Image (cartoon, rainbow, N blue to C red):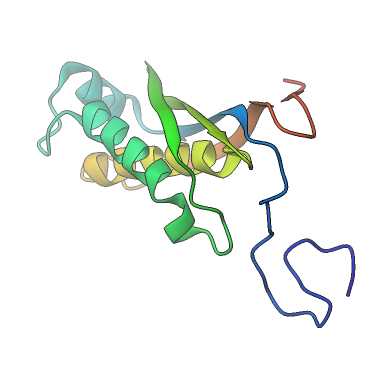
Length: 157
């Protein structure tokens, strides 16, 4: 089996050896959305959710998740993150999350940004589920990545 980076010649899983790659500054930005009933969005906006400040807790959860990505995604390299931000846009029908992860390393931070968004949105669900069990998480996607051998990439959105 050749051509698959996470499999060796015998087909066994392996972590890709990035030791020969140059260390470069890399950044990735990801987004995602959770839709909910207007009453739940209003409760979040007004700080009336009984579990506490939903977006503050979700922000911390997203940042912590980015730092644990290698523990969650098999064969993912642990990275020395230099920055992680998680921001939210709350509207009448839900919350859009945007995470940015940055490092100076030999491999990219796309998985860290995507993990941050995913866990942040899961945290919003957990904290507000008493108000709306039918919330829907969707549209988790990479918006951009910069740095590294393959260069910059931006979604065509």
